[in-house]
Length: 270
Image 1 (cartoon, rainbow, N blue to C red):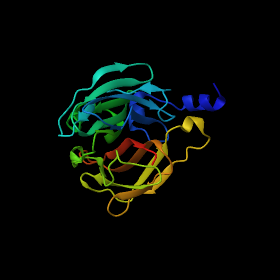
Image 2 (image 1 turned 60 degrees about the vertical axis):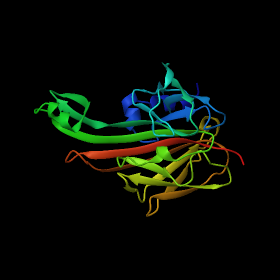
Image 3 (image 1 turned 180 degrees about the vertical axis):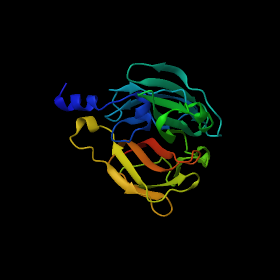
Image 4 (image 1 turned 90 degrees about the horizontal axis):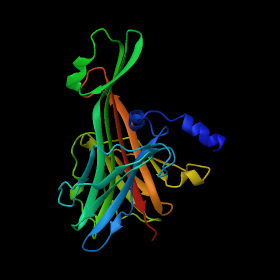
C-alpha cells in the first residue's frame, strides 16, 4: 500500500458519519450493472458501497435497510438476493415491465451531540424524540438530515412516472432523461428544494476511475434561477453526481438542516 493510500485510509470514519459527511470525505453510491436494457424482461444487479475512490470497494458496505425500488407504474418492487460483505452490499432486481425504474435510499432524521458527565455523546432519532436527551446535557448540537441517493434503469423506452416530486428535501427532476445520456451531447437537470427550484447550488460531477488517474477532474456547475444545470458530457462512462447544502432547521428551532442528493448516471458513447 502506498503512502497516499495510507493517508486516505486514515481519513475514513464511521459509517453513519460517512452518510452525512461532505463529499470530499467519503462517497456513498449504488452502481447498477446496466442502465439501458431491452427485451420482454431483464435482471439488474447492483453494488452499493461507501468509499473514497468512486465505484471501488475499499471502505464499507452500504446499509440497504432504506432501499426503495420504484417501478414504471410507481409500484414498489422487492430487491432480491441481498447480501452484505465487508466492503460492499449487493442486490438484484427483476425488470418485468417496460419503462424506467428508480432505485433510491432516502435517509432522514435528527442527529445530536452533547456532553454528559464529562463524556461526549451521540444521539439519533426524530424531532419528537429529542425530549429523550437528558435535561442536564450540555453543549447540545442538533442537525436535521435529509439525504437522497438514486440511480435509474430503463427496460425498453424510458418513461417519466418515477420522477414525480415528493416535495421533501433535495430532488432531481430530469429535463434530459437520465437513461438517455450520450458523450458529446448536452443534458439538462432541474433540482428542487422542498418542491421549489433549488437555486445557486454547486453540483459536482465526477467520472468513474479516479483510482487510476492523478486528478479527480470534477465538473462543478451552479444551478440557475430555475434550479437547472446543463452538462456537456466529455466522454462515456459512469458518473457520480452530488449536490449538498445547509440551511436553518425546518422542524427543530436552532438546528442546522443538512440536505444532500447524489446519483449514479451512465453516459453512453454516440
